[in-house]
Structures are given as structure tokens and as C-alpha cells.
Image (cartoon, rainbow, N blue to C red; front, top):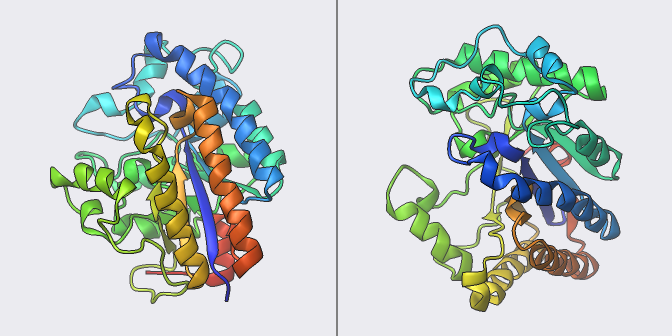
Length: 324
């Protein structure tokens, strides 16, 4: 069995962190993000790349009224009320539709994703739901996923099979709820110390590992035993850290690190799972697109040499059924 290259993108726009991002100063950033997405899709089509776009369900809506119509009756009851993004609707921060508010609606971009060959529309929950936050319940999580599925069916005729938990807040006991909502595969975190727990050293460890092999190879075997649920957990390998001007001198190390890991996976017939957010390319778009193209060109070389294969998350599930 040949190695697999999986890409997943967490598509959020402003819904990713409105409690942190002042939209009045981030509009150009998200406008840039919207312009980047078709260019990323063009690269994926050029190099025959499959990818899963795990998309916040709020972005599916064609209007604010439709968003409200499909919202669950029970909203997440976080103790930190700033994390319930329904407040943006209630306080009239959200506009009427994509034309008036391209930061909170994106049905036209979603249609482009669906129309591009080898792309999968997945879910990033309906409301960018936080499973590890105090106050919310598994019932609220399930209602949230049901809303995402209903709106995807209504507007795009799709049933969503792949889930990425917002901020990678995976809660294993919630997998049965995800299964009941039609989910087949979930992105999990790498099995390495700096992705576990809440240690203050974790972000530093992840940053260093972007450049230097602090961890072992982050590829993974193509089959593992199932312990928790019939929902498959597909490990992430590497966050594709965006270009930064202050880090310009070390960008080559970052790209080489990814290439080396891809090579290891291809040679050893393992899986390698790269992920990022489309908005990560909002600053320095040309540099980020250039780096992405370098990685995709490297994949093409590995495909030729080793039969390395590009798959979406649900393709991987259907072909391997990797489960934990």
C-alpha cells in the first residue's frame, strides 16, 4: 500500500476568533483571504491535489435570516459568554448576506470549492464550537453538528463526512454524537508531547519543531486499532506555519522540514497530514502561495518516485479506515 498525503484546511474567516480579532482592523486581511482561496484551488487543480475544507457552518448561509432559521434552538452555554458567537448576530455585527458582509458569509466560495475536482467539503462545526470549554454539553454539540448538516444539505446538497474540532479541542466522548450526525472521520492531534495537555512549553515546542526535528517523524502507519468509536481519528502531522517577514531568513528550514517529512512518509508507505487555515495566507499572500507551490511540486516528485497518493480525509477513511 502506497503512502498517503492528506491536506485539511480550517475555513473560518472572522468566525475563527471574533473575541480576539477586531474586525475594523482585520477587513483587509479577510478580503485578502477570500482572494487567496481561488488561487489555492487553482494550485490544487494544477497539481491534482485532494483536500478537505473543514468549514464553519455559519459560512454556509445565504443570508442572516437563513442562518437564524437553521440555528439550533439550544445554543452552547459556555461560562465564558464571549465564546458564543451568536452574540455577533444578536448585536447586529453580522450583515444580511455575503454581498454586504463577506467576513461572515461565504456560499460563493464554498460553491467554488465544491466545483473544484478532488475537493471535499467537511465541517468545522456550525458555530465554531468549543468542546473543552466549561458550561457546554454534548447535547448542545450534537445539535450544533445537526445544524451544520442540515444547512449543507439545503444549500449544497451534501452530507458532511469529515470533522475538524475548532482549536483542535478533541473530546473523545463526543465522538458518538459526531457519529450519530453522519461523521466518519475526525482530524486528531499528533501523538507527540507538545500537542498534549496545557503545558506552557507546548507552543514553544511546536514552534521549534517547525524548523528542527524536536519530535520523531510525524507521519503515521496506514492502519491502527479501534478503541473508542467507529469514527476514525486521522492524525494531523504538521501545521503549515505561514510566511512571516520577521522569520524570512528561516523560511527555507520550515519548507525543508515539511519536504523531509513527506519524503519519509512516501518512502515508508505512511500517511502525512498537512493542515492550515486559509486566513493564514491573508498576509504575504504571494510568499505563502509560492511556499505552498514548492510543497505541491515536491509531492508531484514523490508521486512519481514512490506512488505517493493525495487523498481527502474521507477518501482516506474509505480506503484505509484508520481508527483509534
